[in-house]
Length: 206
Image (cartoon, rainbow, N blue to C red; front, side):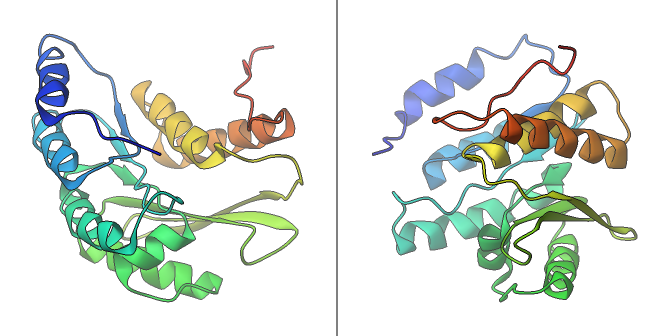
């Protein structure tokens, strides 16, 4: 079971970062609407750097009513983040659309753009093709698909790894499409190196 940090403690943690210089910020699981709102206020103060939102909405501890409340809160993040990286289920929840085809992925990405997302990456995984892991990128002009062969290894943590790798690449000023390409390659290698706990985030220089 996931228990949210006390709001007062979380605010103290954010306040402790006031003198820290960031090159990028990656946001993952936000366990409550209240913590999400504090996080949104924090990133509004850091609009000069890349901010990556991995909108974790679908995990077994969630109840449906919690997901509904969090959806509205996460949509408020869109104008203030650089990249959003939902998986298919999360994109379906955020857009209210059924996403079952690559064309649906494009439609959903365009809708998120209309809601304020500057760069959208929808992680399709193997839900549309049992031989390829497919992700779709849209920035208001360019639609680009990224694919890798599907492997049967344990991929637990792959989505988080992908979003974190994008953040790391953007932090060193890698252009967006190249950042996605490099991050997908890194994540693919992490899946190939996975163990019983999930993906293994190896050193790419090894």
